[in-house]
Image (cartoon, rainbow, N blue to C red; front, side):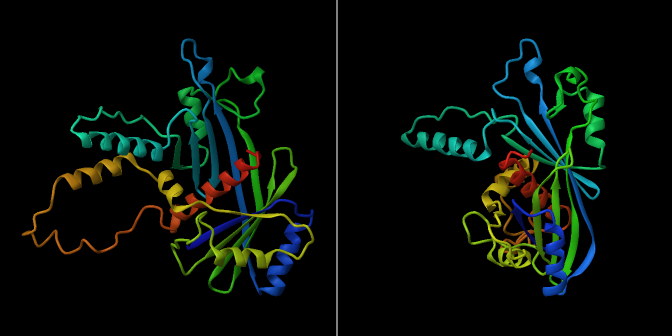
Length: 301
């Protein structure tokens, strides 16, 4: 698996999938590799209904099912981002430069965004039901809101095809289908197989290599509206943040290595594999995050 880029075709004709298929097969000598199928469910919390438990804003949850995994994005608007907390810690530390003891810092229980990978598909709904968790499907009627966790969330799906172009590219193209059956544009995803990771020089995280490929598979249609979907490295680093991993690294920094121990020195310059490289489930997780973000930005989710 390789580095992936995503784009939205907002106003395709009803034959959009057929036009792209014809373009890939005829002009790129692509090969059909099968179906591309995703499903996305939306939930919101109902914590405000608890007596004596005021909340500033309800939380949102989006669950995208891809293959055998479910990628879950939780967002709490009332919680700070990790970047905000780090900036506050830095400001607090600088206040101690005049000899005064800086006030103690308390870390939040969670940050604004939490991104999880679960399996098997369907396990999330079962867990919410068993725990009687205060989450209800989005757009669920108020008459059924008392049955928390029992109903199915509003499902949005992406249905399309996967193509191989040569030995280096995989292209996924699909219609975004709402719960009622209406089509809301298309998603196009290009995967460059030779590179498992690619750091973009652009500030928004877009890749010219992937953008050019995605533009080439689009049919030449007048007034076509397309949008590149990307996430910067700094944003993705915050999404991947792991509290246990961070505490482990901080403890390692506190205990310096023995320079006379030949078994623990000499490898400081070697690069270790980071969580989030574009391989296996990590590639799928970043793809899922981009898809959820794109559809949220348009108000579809």
